[in-house]
Every structure is written in structure tokens, then in C-alpha cells.
Length: 167
Image (tube, rainbow, N blue to C red; front, side, top):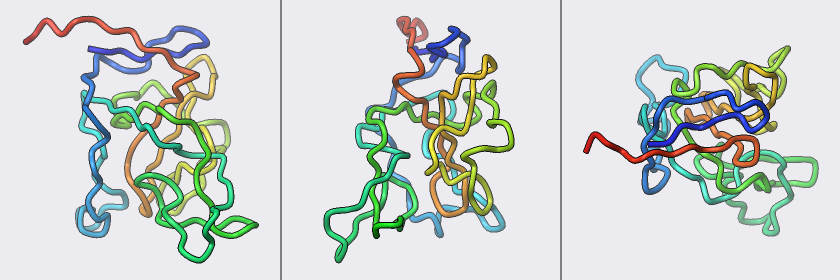
């Protein structure tokens, strides 16, 4: 079991969570989204977490192949365009992906900074959630165009683990 804490102040951000072997695959968002819902089902089930080994989130850099672009980030909006054409994430690797409700102590930044999106934040502008101490430590992706997940920054959070005694 693992609890994630703010590196700045030590505040517990999550309850005990169980590690998944990998970030679950998100089904086709148009098919997975319940009728009338504005966001997809959560990527990670409550009570669990997974490590995203690929770059995720801001900053974004131009893709090498502008004629056959790939998605801008894992499970994110399919393709994104910047000033120099199609872009790809150059954000941190090894972000901790959790169910957004498993980190309910996190708050939006003042003025909803970095939270642009249609139905919720896209998660493409950098950290948009803060610890109660004010440290920017996570990015919520909750827009209708992508997955519903929360990424804890691996450098701004720390994990404390204990053996699972229930099993």
C-alpha cells in the first residue's frame, strides 16, 4: 500500500493506494463515455495508481514527422498543434496516475490557471492542482476530448509504502 505526499510540506495527498502493473488502456472515448456525460470514465480505478513511463503533459515540442503525426501524449487529445506544427509531450516521465477522487485534498489553482478545456481541464498546460500548502503538484485531465485522470508530478510528490496486511 502506498500513500503519496507533497514533497514541499509532507501533507498526505491520497489514501492508501495499490499499484497497478501498468496504466490501463483507455477505450475509444466516444464509446466509453456514458450517454450525456461530459467526461470519459476514469482511467485508473479508485484505490489504485499506475506509473506513466512516457512523457506526459507540458511542455510540448514540435514533432519530427509533421506529415504523419502521432498523438501528442499517451491517452491525451489525439493530435495537438502549436506555433511550429504538430507537437508531442516533452513533459515529465513516471508521473503517478490516480483516480481524481483519490486526491480530493488538491485544489484548482487561483483563477483556474492552466485549466483550459471545453468541459474540464485538458491537462496540457502544466500543473493545475495544488496541495493545501499551495505547492503546484498535479495535473488534472478531465475534458471531454481526453481521458479522466490525475497525474501527480514525480518530483513534487513522494511515496510512503507499507506492506499490504490484508492479503
